[in-house]
Image (cartoon, rainbow, N blue to C red; front, side, top):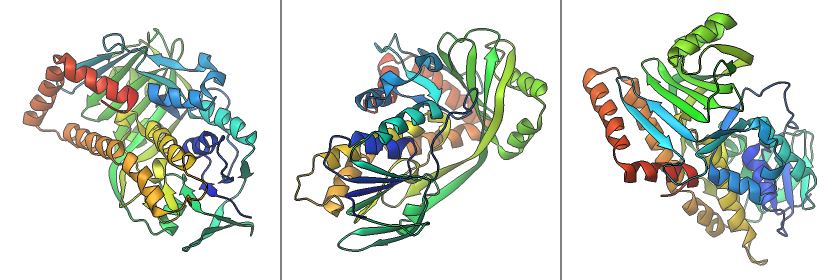
Length: 387
């Protein structure tokens, strides 16, 4: 079967790329191992969607169809250091309507998938897994595990941090484990969050509380492996008490809602995001520490940039040409690099228990808070992906 584009991975970034190309003449194949479904209750996998990502989803016709009663608006973010440092970001002070939206992964994924199923230029191969990839000067050929063969000018790896496409294309990745796991859980709170997100840089990791609607919130605790094991082993009541205390009881008493989960944290850099007939987007192209909250937003901006490049191609130009793909790579060179190194540096800086460093880093937070121009620049970068 012949296509112009094969997307391996129908997650948020891969599915968004396909939908972004809905008005193009490209024939698209999407290969995904499972149809996304909404879990009962609240999804443990929560993302912070930046205003730029919300606009992109709106352009795709997805944002308006989401259940906004399940989205939490972030109007303020309060960041606390480990020795008195404090930094407050306010949407109002920066002239923005919101800093971010907090919502479930499945909420957005299911809606993008619904758009994908109705798309005239997309063929879905689901459930399906890739089995072999061959790339030559003429085409990329993908064989699925059920024996079907697909051919296209370009294969896009949107298949996550352990990308099969990246490995088969021979693109090297340098992985730096943090020795930490992100422990995630949702809570019903005694007091409403009023749209405030909290983040604490602690001696035992980075703790974030993200506002969900009403009196609910989502927690991400980037904890050393030993602490992560301890937190997961606690019964619900002592677990809630531990989280309450770690956050200074900012939202009062907490009640666990749903199941806890944990995922390993690591920095992943690739030597290149494109090769002839191959491009990487999302977590296949970069993995960063979750303290920035930008992981999924990077993936959406990858999808947007690649869709713009491919959608603008004249009919005579091949989508897999390296000159075409380098245009996408140039567009996406700066933001992932800056966020990877900034979050890595912050993680290492606050992870070192040194009295001198502690004084300097907390002083730096307080100083930044007293410089409105710098603070507003940081807010606008977080909101729009640019200064």
